[in-house]
Length: 216
Image (cartoon, rainbow, N blue to C red; front, top):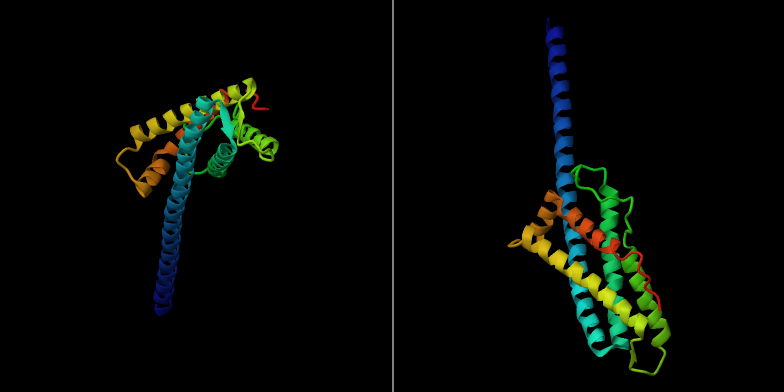
């Protein structure tokens, strides 16, 4: 009789331990998931803010170039730095998207169509153009250079892209994330999938210019 009771108690204890271990694992995974989403949200928000603020700086520089129909060495350096940082930020967004594409962070109907995606191609081409300007003109003694017809057209198209990007991001933020700050914005971007909407919006703008040749 005692043996039966001991076996029953042992069985209950084993089941209890298994349940406790399972519960602990689930709690740990849940906390890890929450922490991961928070870190991911902060990184994504930082990248989007980098795109937004650097693009605003680019617009100011391009306006000056178009008004004067010239470009200074300082403006070339400023453009190169800002386009480079936009490039890095957008690539970071793509990295996060492709890494998590099959995860639970995504709604099934909220994915970027990768079949026609340029994935950062336009900003990479612009950065290459600015780098060519650096190589060609930074060694000259001139403080600025006049824009020829092709370079003037390139800068006008660059401004057109930046204007579209600026209007899109600011309108989206105002509509979806107004009255929120910092981590609140980051959390809602992840929870609602807004960062993917922004990535798709950037991609749609870029796709309109992917066949334009940014070359000296």
